[in-house]
Amino acid sequence: MKTTMTYHDPVLLKESVDQLVKNPDGIYVDVTFGGGGHSREILSRLSDKGRLISFDQDLDAKQNIIEDPRFQLVLSNFRYVKNQLKFLGITQIDGLLGDLGVSSHQFDTGERGFSTRFEGDLDMRMNQQQSKTAASFLMEADESDIARVFANYGELRSAKKWANKIVHERKENEIKTTTDLKNLFAGFIPDHRKNKIYAQLFQALRIEINDEMKALEELLLSTPDIIKPDGRLVLISYHSLEDRLAKRFIRSGMFEGEPEKDMYGNWYAPFKPLQSKAMTANEDEIAKNPRARSAKLRIGIRNHAEEEK
Image (cartoon, rainbow, N blue to C red; front, side, top):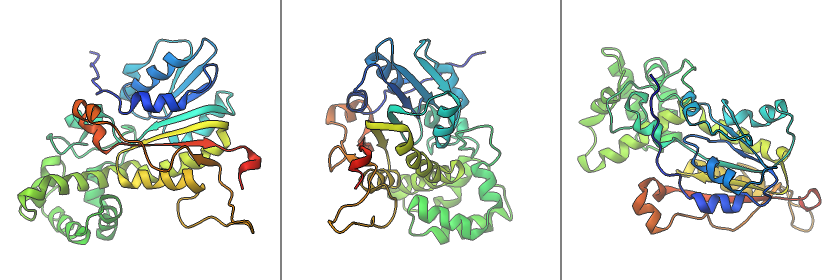
């Protein structure tokens, strides 16, 4: 029996696609297809000559395939976008959009284990064909690795304490479900901080299980090779770790440090930011879609080769 997939309204829809599609005859890529909201809006801006390639590693996305000859869905992690496009005979595109993070469908499907709101297995796999789950990580990883994940990806000050608690608990009991994890820490977190701490713990595990930060780095590093001069890189992020990578890469082409400058104070950069500050959702959109509250939209314009200095 086919399951109906429900997805919330896409965030910053008009703003992102307005900045993405500048050539109706062009080739565009949506690396986070999900429910297809952004993809449908992109297609509405394209001529009969235009083309859209969308990516998603979650097999549930197949339920939302768009019946349009200009559209193609590739079931793959976006870190492989360059090679996948090459396989399709595409070497350069006019723009790429990424609506990063977890889809509303994934959050709202309790058995996927992404949300603190539902009872479900500690799964958290975006690609359900991979073997590593949040539960297997918590049961098998070294205490130092668990602490690293909580500190780096959840930005938790008490990461070592949480990791130690997990290692002691798993000697006696399995940590298999979202409720198991929440109950393990319930007595150590003040009630007014529980939601925030749980969200940080779940975010950290999700990022680790799906290798999200490394995948995003690989995606970004591939964009100068595939986006044409004057083409657009459009990114919507939902937490500071993603936004920091997007901001630094669009500004300098790097993730850490400062680029080397020439004698005139210039540096090589594949993109230039459309504006210095990220765009955010307005109050009306936030009222309709609370997920938009944390969204930040950044746009990079691909430099011509002679301008990369």
